[in-house]
Length: 419
Image (cartoon, rainbow, N blue to C red; front, side):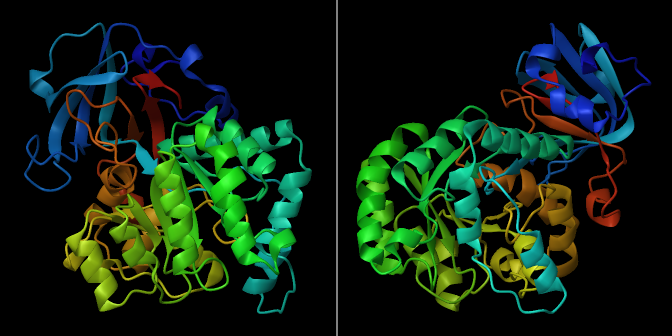
């Protein structure tokens, strides 16, 4: 079902099967398309709208051609187009940009989650459990899982999704994960330094040598980014620096799992090395906040992890008041944040992290784009990618106001109706 041929009063809710199987090949747009009668349009460009960070335009329209936005403005001034879609007085936003996920894996950790949420002790391998299952899984199983979760995210409005390796921890298994991911997203991250591989438990520096040598050689051709879990029990500051600088020499851009479980050097290392994003940022000193405020590294907050582990929430208000750029992402993974729902994370951020609804929406769209160093997504303005979503609500505030309700009525990616 293509949006540009939908009757003006009919923007239907797809079934899960429709969403999972709708692709650009089956939902191609032809000519120019106008989405009209938009109650509230979020552009994320203050110069186009009301001057706020969301750049709101009321009673608006958007015109697309091919995979680009070509016009934004008041509905009454919309130009003639080949096709028209009536938004019916609902809100339109840029597609969500999920800049942190771990989707190439096998198995799940249901029992671990159940025990944690039931207050029971549970001895398990954590990430190592997923490593074992992922190594054992054939390629087609891993790819089915990956596409399942990408389709699940798309139905909830995510049009750009970064995803990582990190559950293979050998050169061949890490390269396999990245090859599979690169078939489905341009935003692919090499995370060989997720934890020390079990085979190197007594030789962590030897494992760093593997990551920065043969593993990097195998993985660099398939990735845009390099990441490291800089944390007590994973990789210390010197080891993280070695991983990231090796990646930089191979043309990979850095991002860092930083300051999730304890205070440490991760955030300041990220800023020092010009990382696009420091992710988690749950345990920050004043010096960490100052470093983020003085640099251009985005603080990516992942409230699904705190929800799933009952950890203390990141203090988004502290970061925002200091002038730090903040992104919101899902951290979708089988152990500590098994959600693909950006709307859920928006609601958590508003309820528990001190963000306003407008700040959370911006962080989940333009903020995620900033964390990926992209200016063509997370925004709706002439020249931007035509990635947008239609809410079954008149305002983006409803994403936090009506938590858990499936409000995404339609999604366009690259100008094509995909949900």
